[in-house]
Amino acid sequence: MNTAPPLDPTRCPLCGAANQCAMEIERLTGQTQEPCWCVNATFTPELLASLPQAAQNRACICAKCAAIGAKSLV
Image (cartoon, rainbow, N blue to C red; front, side, top):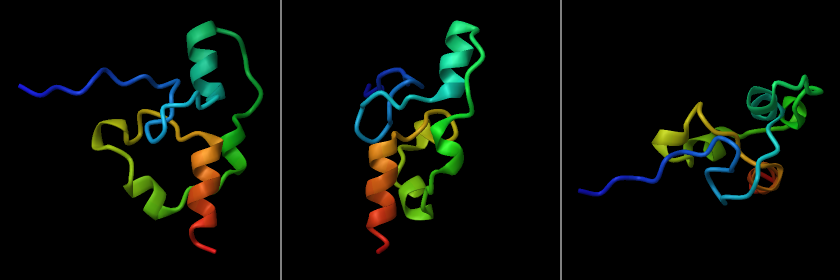
């Protein structure tokens, strides 16, 4: 039986780096956070489609992967 490792919502599902998700930090610490960096980020449909099914709507893409995805459209 092939099972995927548990999803870590603090890590980018594409590269595994810390995603710096303010909403997740607030959930984990109980400390109010400033709005997340992703509020002003561009996530292309192609980038979102590249996420593993288990991570969709459950883990944030990091800023580096978001930037790479946006540049691929230029």
